[in-house]
Length: 314
Image (cartoon, rainbow, N blue to C red):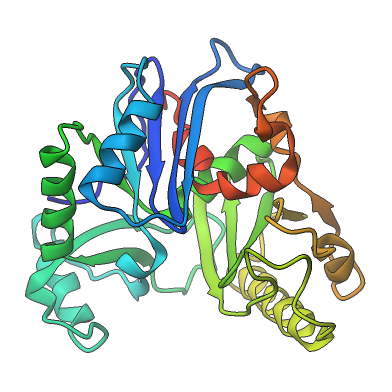
């Protein structure tokens, strides 16, 4: 089975289960017309549990009463993303070409990988630049086991998704994207960065700096060097985009909520030249009455699931 990128069918809504750090589920209805917000109709969390059949069945019970198709967001360590040059081959030959390109990059045989890929638009790239694509690779054995897992739990699975495309969906919703946007989401083990323009993913990076731990009362000590390193990698990413797509306008950096308040917006503001702005997810979602999702710390926990649920007709 290949991954299905979230472009774009139009059901009445999506239910998403994210398996990183526990099980986190959301059911979201899309807006009825442009300019409206998506509606979160149900959400449930089972923190710090493993993904086994009993817990999956329990999560399904917590998320019942919606008939939306189901998306499962893979954990960060369950797949890899590679940026590779696009070969000048026929479409039917692309998969074979990519397997050959990934052979030295994977720690398992490329023949055992499930692959999905998407083009990086060349509209604003330098004319002499070789076209590139992002390739997602996951072990076929893992994908087959995961699908069997849902089948045995009697939970129909429609789409397997990755974390970066959910973040891309949220970036696309920020505004009409007449300029590129850098979106930063800090999670316990690192910082996910994406640059999008007009709904397309131009750059993704994962910066492996631990700025906080889930059960801490605050940031890890007072090690400002961690924030220095994150800011440096953010700046390098923006510089890379400017060099390789100099004609593309850029509209600053948005910082998603974090599970623990670490002052990330202010720390990046003091270290970067670009405008840095906090991202308010309430701009895109209507929360259930009296929901914990009114708190930005809870929004951060559900961030990847909420992003995966942001699907509209293309």
